[in-house]
Image (tube, rainbow, N blue to C red; front, side):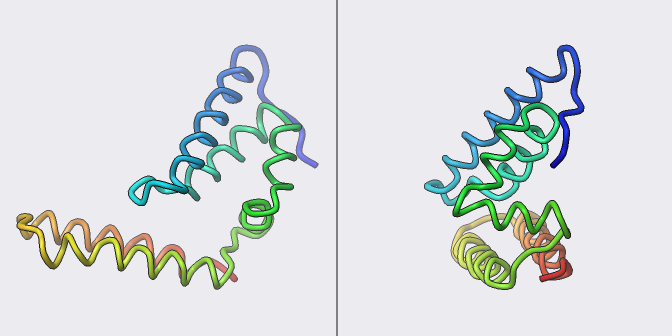
Length: 126
């Protein structure tokens, strides 16, 4: 089990940041443009340094706990999560790229961003 490393004013600030990230991750479950996983990873990182109880609670969550534990222990992303992320990203980016009158440099930047994120995800261990 990790120990809380923050002292003084850092601990409440990290706790507040963790709670904010947790809230944004929860909202991201329902809003397609707000990512859930990065906020949960940030919340876990903040909690690991500020509140062992909150960190343990997040890692024991039946939905997010296994994913967060895989990431913390091995930097791993499970294959089904990789496929879900890939399909969702491609589905969400296809409409703006194909049907909206967006300047081509912006479309190119969006496509490059999605490809960069997907390459990062797929190069992580399973």
